[in-house]
Length: 135
Image 1: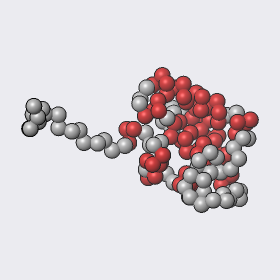
Image 2: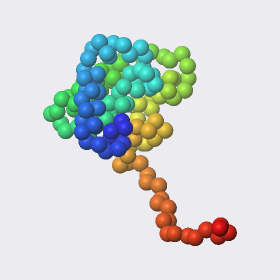
Image 3: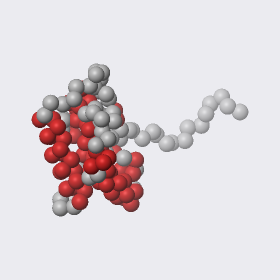
């Protein structure tokens, strides 16, 4: 995600390749213990969406994202594992947020929104102003 935020294409491609390797490896997917946003299915799906959504159709990463999305939809159609805690990161709220469209910007607090979509802070006035009362 840092490579994406910093817009470093070679690192972004390496990170995308590592993510695709993860989301296409059944042994790794079987280690996900729940559906939560923090360390579960919802978090993986959300991260993959943010990193791979701009993938060109017919590429391995676009196909891997489509397969992950399909698997997530199957999980959501079945009875989801209900988290024992409430809240966004480890509770049902985060799972529900993952199903919202990306354009809502709900994930600004997670710093997973691509930097091009973030509001830009105003630039400070860089004119030189002599300090009064020094010296």
